[in-house]
Length: 200
Image 1 (cartoon, rainbow, N blue to C red):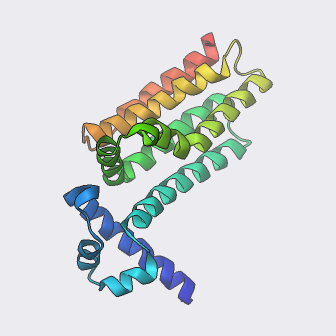
Image 2: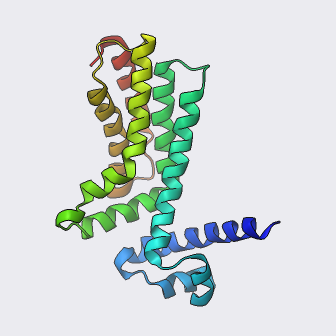
C-alpha cells in the first residue's frame, strides 16, 4: 500500500475518532489533546495529519458534502432514469448519507446553535456550504422542464421544496436526535410525483 493511501486511511480513522469526541464533548470542549488521546496517538502525530480541531471538523463536513455531490452528479448523468426517478433517487441518497453521518449532523447543529453572531450567522454558513447541492437540484428540475417531464414548474420554488425535505431530515437527525429520517423518503416520492403531475 502506498504512503499516500496509508496517510488517507489514517486520516479517515482519526476523523472517526475525532467525531466521537465532538459528539461527547461538543465542539467548544473538544481539544486537540482529547482527539489525540481518543485516537491513541500523540498530539505531535496528530499535527502531521491536521493543523487544528477546526480543520478536522471542516474536513469531515467537506467529505460528507463531496460524497453527496458525487451521488447527485452520478444520478443526474444516468440516462436510464427519467426526471421523476432522478429527483426521487437524489433525495433518497441524500437522506441515506445524512443518516450515515448523523453524528456529524448532530455536532454541526450544536456548533451552529452556539456560535450565531452577526455576520457569521448559521444561515449564511449553511448556505455557503450547500450551494452546490442546491444548484444540482435546480439543474435537475431544469432538465425535467426541458425534457417536458415537468410542466408549470417554478425552478426556485421546486428547489426550495426539494431542499426543505433535506432540511427536515437534518432537523430530525441533528436536533431531534432520531436514528432515522427514512419516513421522509416517502415524502420525497410524493413531492416529486406532485411536481410531475400538477406542477408548482
